[in-house]
Image (cartoon, rainbow, N blue to C red; front, side, top):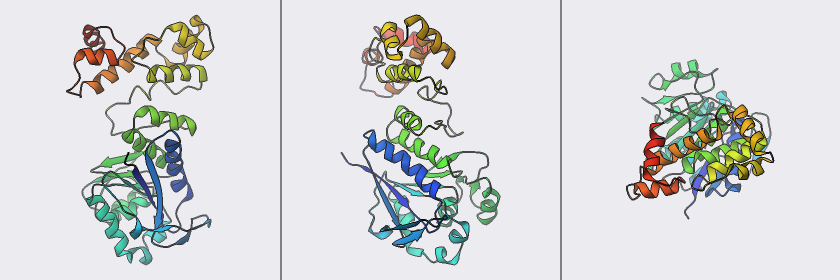
Length: 306
């Protein structure tokens, strides 16, 4: 299987959390089996982070082959560096990034990395965001860019920008969801002990992410099993065993922690799965019913109308 490359373009005086937060998301994703490779490159072979931690042995950007579907991540760095003469002189680097986009790769900035992305001209006429301290400055410096305030991240024409610091984690989780699904993104968020938030541009939040803002491990295990086995008929007694509770207590605690009943939650999972499968013209409604653990096509209509 061809692997997607996640390419971190590391600039001198990079903000460590901008780099490490997103990087950790992809590290966890690889551990879960996501077919991606992570690559680190720069225009210099040794540099320091903004906290003076030295980084070395980085591959030169010109040696990194970027293909369609790859992601080039640009973590934020000290603005004095990004807006300074040293960066402006890196013509070959800017062209490499522009060429990557024309090859249908995805370009993603974190925090002040938006300055770098704006300098390529690719953000002209497109929406973007950055750290709240920099939105007004970015807007004045690049008036052709549609800079948005009070949003975690943006996505338009394979150009992604995030607000900075921990929102780089949100952006990375969003990318994982695009590469695989919301469930994997959620599992990684839990691994990192963060909420899996979504962009304000999304029309709605996936049921795989809703009803999970609680800390009850037994109910999380039940939800995991339901999400992974929606095509199976799972008995309440079996789910109670997973939660290490009695059946009566499990149903009570489930509603207390999530705000809905187990049956309603299952139907929401099925509704989302049905919507996904209806996009496949090769599947009959009978096939869709089977994939969702339903006995008849009529149940599909009943669930979709609920």
